[in-house]
Every structure is written in C-alpha cells, then in structure tokens.
Length: 207
Image (cartoon, rainbow, N blue to C red):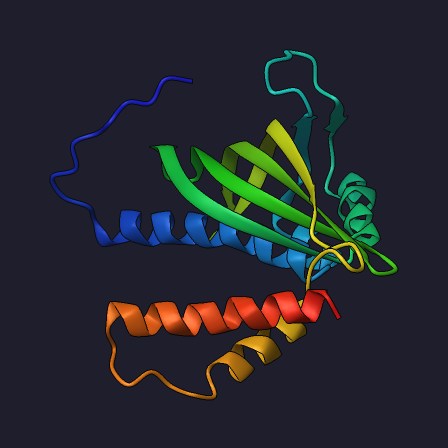
C-alpha cells in the first residue's frame, strides 16, 4: 500500500475528535489484549466484522479468516496460554476519513512471555494492521481488521544456573560495590566503581 502525505492546512473540531477516537480504538485493542479482557476486545468490533490473519505477510492467502464478532472469542482467548503479553502500538495513520467510515494502518510490536519453571522465553511478533473503521451510534468500531505478521523473533530470557547472575543478585552486588562512594564524579572514579562491581561479579560466579 502506497503512503501519500497530505497537506493539512486546517482540521475541524469534528475531524480532530474522530481522529482521536480512532487512535483510542486502536490503543484499546492492545490494552484489552494485554489485560485478557476478551469481552471488551470483542466489543471494539462491529457485529458483522471481518477479521483476517496473514502469518506470512507476503502471501496473498490468509491463514485465518473470520466473519463475525462472536467468532473472535477463541482468537482472543488463545492469549491465555501466555504468562503475559505487551502489545506496543507504534505509528498509526488514518488513510481516509469520511463521516461514518475510515481506513487506516497501524504498527505493533507484540511481546509474548512464556514461563516454564525457571525458564522464560519471549516471542516478539512484528505486526501491521490494515483497518476499516465504521461509526455506529456515534462510536468508532473495527469493521475489518487485517493482521499481517512481518516476522517473528524468539529468545530466551532466563539465565542457565551457574552461568549468569540473576537480577536480584546483580542489584545486591552493585549495592555492595557502591558502599565506598567515589570522591568525585570524575572518569577515573566511575572506572574504579565499575571495577569493584566486576570484581564482586566474578567472586559471585566463582563461589
């Protein structure tokens, strides 16, 4: 989809209000997802909404396609398998805006945390949404939402036993290293403090 910059010379109060309401709708979707408010998330869509997922953003064939608000329930409930999520909404652009219909796109980094015993893994999905919005009874809703996954990233967050210190140990060691504050805020003073921290770190790892 080509992006065309528009020249805004003046924006009416009504247009500004509509733009703000649509941005809040996009943000509400992320908020409800992270708070596991499936009912609230579903309420952001029109009853006959069209929801399409493309796990491969370059493929013209969707991975999943739904045609009603009720059919969204299992999709949103699937987030319950994660320990926590954080959908960070980036830029969002309104491509067209009419009295009761609008189109737009939004970017999102969706973080999914899985915990298995002492092990933590993070999956980050880089997402783009192409949206059609409809204003019903004065409220903007998603009439269509196309979700494109540009790429996925997975990494481990938990250190292996004996190979790295944990966060609380790091804080304790840094506090211990700082018991003798430097005499002045000079470069050498900071280097001395950093050396004390590294010494305590090695001592922690070696017993």
